[in-house]
Image (cartoon, rainbow, N blue to C red; front, side, top):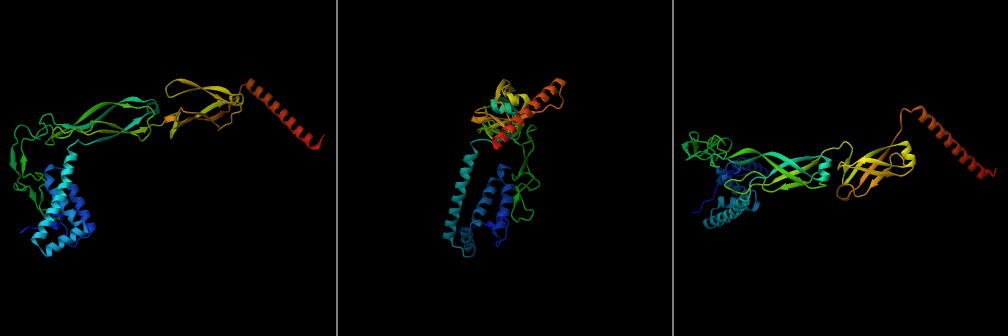
Amino acid sequence: MAKLKDYYAILGVKKDATEQEIKATYRQLAKEYHPDVNKDYEDLFKEINEAYSVLSDKEKRAEYDNLLVNPDENKIRNFTEYIQEFINSIFSGEREQKARKGEDIKLKLFLTLEEAYLGASKEIEYEKWITCPDCGAKGYIGEAEKVKCEACEGTGKRVSGIFSFPRPCSVCRGRGYIIKNVCSTCLGRKRIAKKSKIIAQIPPQINDGDILKVLDKGHEGFKDKPPGDLYLRVFIKDHEIYKKIGNDIHAELPISYSDAVLGANIKFRWLDGKDMDVFIQPGAECGSQKVIPGLGFQNGNLIFHIKIQIPKQLSKKQQKLIEELRKLDQEENNKSIFGIVKSVFGK
């Protein structure tokens, strides 16, 4: 007669466990026995997911509970075959996906404003996992010398903790044996961390937060599987003169009082290191803006905020000229006031 698996025992929960309790227990077990932690956990991980797929679904759980109380061979067989097909379809898809490449690597890439605007070649140094050159990803040298694990007496499982079902032995990691001649280079991990250097080509006018993808520069996969990719997230450093806001670039433009009054061509050093001129119209006011279209990022603008510099110390000649200018201003103001009075009173 077909038999039902004890899904409650597999997850280690009571038969009246709530959905929240089942979910919390599953997450704990899935994290602990994921194949990425140890490939020998794959069967147990699959069984845990099978149990959760039934107990987390109200209809499946109700049908399962009914079969526990009222067993029927045909119904049990149909139920079991359905669940097995469902789980196998999930895990076969996962294996195919994981076989494509190794793990990706994500790094932060800090750029100066000049590098982000003009583009650059940046040397990137980082660590990645590569196949152990000494054992060839076996984890041991030569033929494996296997010794029975004394902790689990070779069974690969131990009963401990709050869960009543057997769990993989933490000493031998569920294998039932320990390898004596472990590779001294990778310590049985099959891969080692190695520093790697690449030259990344930064395109011009890249924005803060953009992500560059460098193919095949991630961690190496196992058994000649393709490596993962390298992802570089861009962070643009603050600049001492220019400030990037969106696609526009802003900067203060200090000018003298005379340049503000008379107008002038003001030189400034641009991000490419070249000197450029910007023309300030006569009568410029402090806080006004001078916009140079298209000189920002991706057709943004360069926006100068005019700041008129008032000298704190004047030479005698400068002071004399300023006083003469003030007299002229007062005369002009008086003329203007006299003209207004005359027009009003007709005198």
